[in-house]
Length: 179
Image (tube, rainbow, N blue to C red; front, side):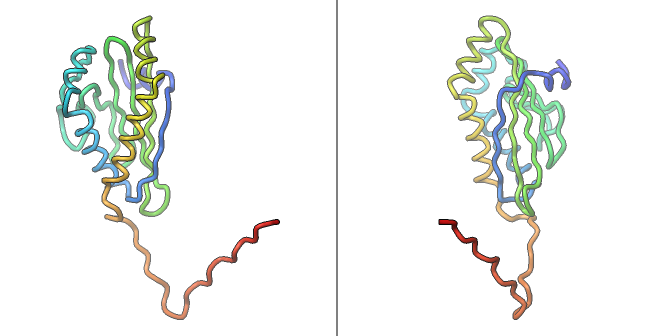
C-alpha cells in the first residue's frame, strides 16, 4: 500500500498538545520517544504475532523515509513539520500522522492523527479491542505528553529583550465581571 492509500484510510482520532519548545527540539525528542516506545520490551514479539512486516527498528536516525519502528514504516518525513508512519498486520492497515506547527514563538503544536481500517470480523473485533476500549487514545496521549515533558524547553526559542527602563508598558486594563 502506498502513502495515498494510507491517507485515504478512515479517520480514527486526533490528539493535540502544545509543547513549550521550538519545532526542532520537539522533532528531535519525538524521534527519541518513538524509538523508545516502539523499540523496547515486548513490542517486537507482539508485532510478529500480529503479522507486521516491520517488526524491528531499522534505518536512519533521526527518522527519515524508509526508517522503521516496530509496527511502522516511515513513509514520509519533513523535519520539524510532519512524520507519516504507516503499517499493517493481519487485522488492520493504519497510519499515524504526526504534525508540528508553531503555536507561538518558542511553542510547538504537536498533533497525532490516526487513520485505520479493520477488515473482516477479526479486524472488527481487533478494532473494538484497541480503539473501542480507549487503549489507543490513552497510548497516543501518553506519547504526546512524554514528548511535551522531555523536549528541552526554550532551546532555540526566540527570546525577547525587556523594554528599556522607564518605558515599560502599562498592564492591560482589567475586565469587569458583569453582576
